Length: 390
Image (cartoon, rainbow, N blue to C red):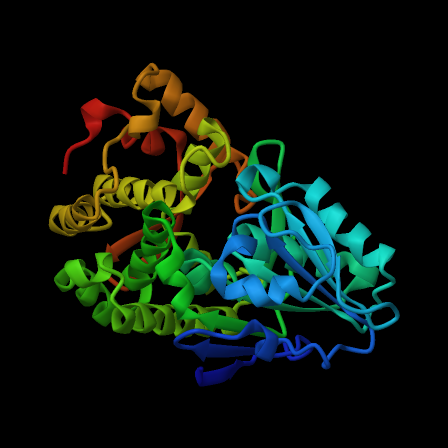
């Protein structure tokens, strides 16, 4: 049931607005995307083998001839020029590649979708990122709608128009800024998530709380049991608060030239960890949570925040069972100096850097954030165990 919506307008007036819609309870996808309502240029739905097996999508998937839940396949509802196509692709970060993006585009071309058609991504951040990227480059841009199905995608990945894919072991190295026309946030999907996926989204929720929302932070701090039990009211609140916070930031700074950089709290360290381990080796949120811990230590090391605030940050991360160690447990069998070298090298490849130094997002205290550049030696200080104290 749709219970709330609002329209996100961007400061770059030439960018069409995004309508964000909030749903609670079970959602009928055949009502959300009726058989009889097809854009004149056709529509291409993209999902993955995991999402296609969810009971909530069963009638929807069955409406496409040729589509097989859980199996990479293509289904069709009606013929071109106003075709409804469903593409089911393999699930996982390892498939977030330019080859998969091109497969999406090739499917659209094969069924004669037009520029006035629409791409619709149903899935987690991998699906929403790739579907929106494919839409942004298909015939120089066609409309896109997103239906995020993970907490991480609902609170972060689907909002704000960042699209793309991984390349050569580097996360999201190819992409564009291309906001969706509509984003459908269906909180009931959260109940279907494995704990690892849910925790991944919680890390981005905590990041948003640290950056912009003291009340949300207090909920995560005081109501940990309800949060971890996936209480419906708590989940709705988290999704709404994060969506509004991120929307406010990207409305002001869509292309990340200023305030939007703050949203990378924990990500400089986290993306480097993902690169060194191999993309998909650990959940994105786990990498970000570890990155937030490293950023907190770096803030203290540079005298930007108090040791008390660093400890407060480390404590809440630890209570949710995220690693706060200088060396992430997944790298514990390697030489610490070599690990530091590899992580710093990966950080220098980050697309957000503009010089030889490394750009990081640090905090003075909750909701008081600093964008700065630091040297290799400063980074190394918080990547070596013997330096890891508050």
